[in-house]
Length: 435
Image (cartoon, rainbow, N blue to C red; front, side, top):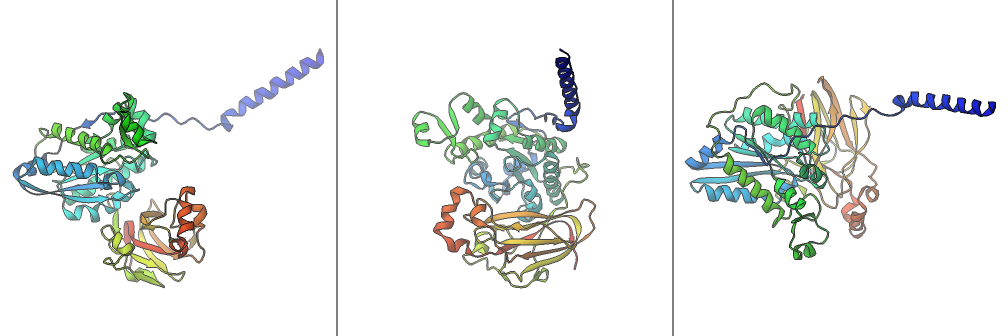
């Protein structure tokens, strides 16, 4: 009996001790993020400047800054056609500044070069899907930077945020909530009274009602069953169905926006965040920045220089491990604007004499080359920093980097992957490059 009491007593002591350590052992639960209520249109101060210009006639330029959903011949093309048919007195043209797989973090650096230098009257900004994994503070800095750069360039340019969604965002949308990324963007839209349109509310409702398949694994069967097939990959709408719904949402909203506001320059009020990225810039590569074996690609030839000529000031190819970039910057943020692709190599990066982790310029998707970027420097306090980036003699493990579904391409086309180059298109910098 005494033995049982002793064992029971010891057991209670052990349990008590374990419970006392639980707060130390278990991480604190992250408070639930508050998501904005989902509405198709929040008109705010409307789009009075561009609408007045459309009604008057003359040249009107509409900028589309976004990712692959905007790059597709879908809602962008369809809404441009609507503007052209609705306003026959105006000569409406587009500024297509979409790059697949990129978010507002790159958009804020390239908006000046890709959009603002072409003097848009209206700018649509679409990054909700590609910013899905980005923290709200970073989205704030980038989206606010886009707004402030736009109105510094021309205070009469109207801006409209447009939101799309992917499969992981569907449940929130069906439950009447925006995604985390769209919620963060709404903070900027509210601060600057910019209208916003969510293209996906009707899509979510149709899916909820059983009339639409958001991500179809058998398009023909779902269509034969009378369902609208929105996409086959859970991200990119089909041009003939999903993009029709997206464009219809924008057009409905534009009709409602028409009577709102009076033409006037937009006031550049105090920023929501003092650390926003309004000073972000895309800086072309100068030959003086480069050492070793580089080739400046001819944008008229059939090589990456030609394919990406509209999106890069110039494109330089590092041919062997003698090739390096050496610069000194006075700034807080530095990214490299470059390509990833099958013949992408590995880079050795040194910042202020400290060797960083190597960076590969091929990723899991790379059966083709595409524009990309990577971070080199984050220095909130700014200051002088010496940067050296050199093509490594070591090659990336390309087979293991590629998705399994993409490995047959490497096996069938080994020559496409055999070389190890670096294609550099520019510097993404908040700060300045010193001579």
